[in-house]
Image 1 (spheres, rainbow, N blue to C red):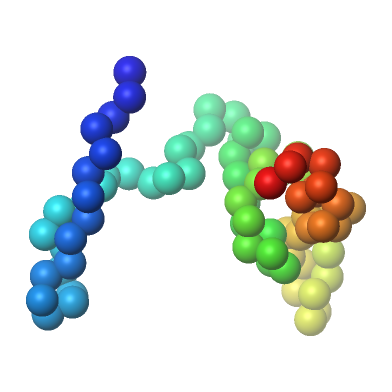
Image 2: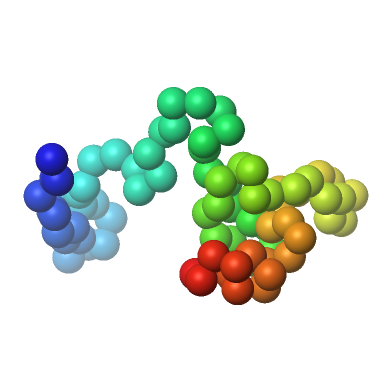
Length: 77
């Protein structure tokens, strides 16, 4: 059952939506392991199983594992 595509329109003042699609493009997964996160380097949303945590500028960040380029080549994205 597919949803009907709703177009988003912004009013002339640029601050409010006339109509907006409800929900998130990143649907909540049933299990924690099925959820997605964005890579700190490339910004693409990937399943948590394809991400690793690395220290970047003193903080732990989720990044593609083994690398963004390798994942793009293997998944064809």
